[in-house]
Amino acid sequence: MENLAETFLKLDRKEIGHLKAIERGMRNFEWVPVEDLMAKGRLSPKAVRGGLSKLVAKKLVFKTNEPYEGYAIGFAAYDLIALSNLVDGDVIVYLGDLLGVGKESVVYEALGKIPARGADERAAETAGVAEEAAPSLPLAVKFHRQGETSFKHVRRVRDHLKDQPRCAWIHAARLGAAKEFKTLKRLYPEVSVPRPIALSHHAVVMEHSGGIELYKVDLKNPEDCVEIILEQAAAAWKKGIVHSDLSAYNVLVCEDGDIVIIDWPQAVSQTHPQALELLERDVKNVVDHFHRKYRLDFELEEALSFVLGEEMPGD
Ligand code: ADP
Ligand code: MN
Image 1 (cartoon, rainbow, N blue to C red):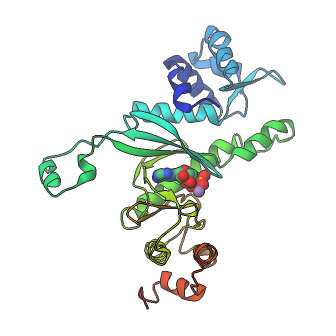
Image 2 (image 1 turned 180 degrees about the horizontal axis):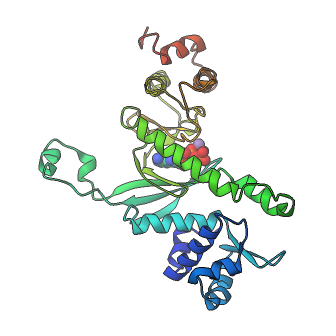
């Protein structure tokens, strides 16, 4: 598979425009009729015959002839649309390699601009705010993929699914990204989560956390780490949020021993009817991991009441 940055560089403005025209049409159609694309002067017949067929050859656009000539995009093109918006908005100035492919996402590393600084710039520098003084900001760009399976499914059996909502996958992925961004904004900086930077379509831009997944590291002080993780779960609970997918895959461990909890789209509020169950499952995942890997014996009950704020650390 070609790198997203390479694909992006090989596209011109017009082609991005074509992808966006199809995306607009997909608000109403699963397969956008060619007439709809040409209506309102959005695309010329020449653009359709030339430009679109090139995009079809690049597999960025899909074409159907039955029951009418129609076009659709998939996640590859949708990623490019979000990326183009983020580049135009000066959020991303450089897109790097793939950072990770998760259950429901594709994450790239990137660089962003340091936000313009005000008059207190000097004060901040003398106060040693290293992050503000860095030349550029390391980012992680997470393209959500929530609806991927339903998309493939819908494509295969599309003729039998006349009543399905149009483009469930676009909706699901956008919703996932919006939920994650909102949660990060709510939790940062009190809880150790990546700093949220921007949201575009189904893409969440956040600060690159620079750690390694908990399941990959061999900790020297596992006791300290489990406590830090539970403290962060407690801090999130205090803000009314349960992660709901907390595991050794979603905790990044930094060199200095700090941790960052990532992957928040499925987080629920404390008022959710299953909030306590989900919190217990989160805590159990953490306790089980440290038991399996480091033979640490933490009582689930104790860990849970600590997260709920019923006990002080070290008790
Ligand atoms: P998924 O729901 O697909 O598991 P994640 O949010 O866990 O999505 O991201 C997938 C992978 O991308 C992570 O396991 C991690 O390696 C990497 N990643 C995600 N966010 C960041 C970040 N802010 N900083 C560094 N790496 C990240
Ligand atoms: Mn994950």
